[in-house]
Image (cartoon, rainbow, N blue to C red; front, side, top):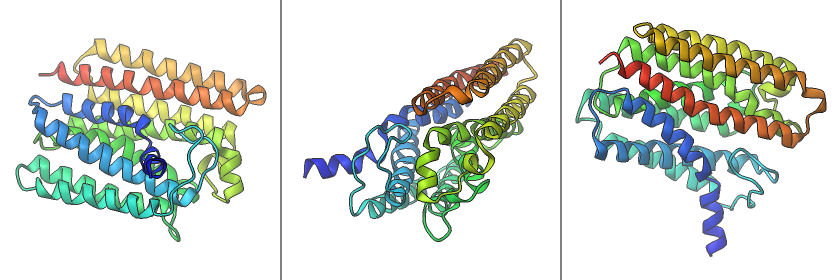
Length: 289
C-alpha cells in the first residue's frame, strides 16, 4: 500500500515544485500588495494540484522506465495514475473557481488555471497528444510554465494585468522556450523509442541549441523592455543573458563528446539559472514603486 501511494506521489514530481513555486512567487513579489494566505492558496492550486496533476497525467501516458526530469529511477506508473492526474487537474479548477469572484485578479487567476488544465490534457492525452508534435510541445510549455505561471502569481494578489507585467510574462514565455529543448536532449533515445516526434528529435540537437540561443536573446530583450526605468537592472539582465549564451555555446561545441549524463547535468545548470533570472526581474520591476 505504501509503495503504491509513494508511486502516485513521486509521479507528481515534487522535486520540481520548488522551481515552479519560485517562479510563481516571483509574480507575486512584483505586486505592491502581498497577502500570505492568498499566496499559500495560490501555490497549493498552481503547484500541487495543477502542476502535480499535469505531470502525473503525462507520466501515465509516457510510461517512462528511465530517468525523467526531477525523477530518477521512476517507479512503474500505477494503474490509475491517469485518473489521479485528472482528479488533481479538475480539483485545481474547482478550488480556483471558488475564489474567482473576490477580485478581478482572482477572476484572471481562475481563467489561467482553466486554460492550463485544457493545455495539460491536450499535451499528454491521445489522440491529440501535442507532446508528440514538434512545435506544439514547445508552445504549450512556454505558455504554461513561462507565461502563465509568472502572470498567475501576479494576479493572485488581486492585481489587474499591467503592460509591464505582460512584457515580463512574454519574456518568460520565450525563456522557457529556450529552456524546454534542453529538458529533452538527454531523453532523445527514449522519446524516439516511444515514437514521440519531439522538437529536439525533429530539429536535431545542434539546431535545438541554436534555437535556445535565439529564444534566450528574445526573452531578455523583452525583460529589458519591461524594465527600462532602471538601467542598473538592465545591465544585470544583459550579464545574465551573456551567461546563458556562453553556456549554450559551450554545450553546442561539446556535443559530439557528451554522454547522456553530461546533457542531463547541463539541463540542471540552466534550471538553476532560472531562479536567478526571476530574482533580477523581481528586483527590476519592484524598483518602479
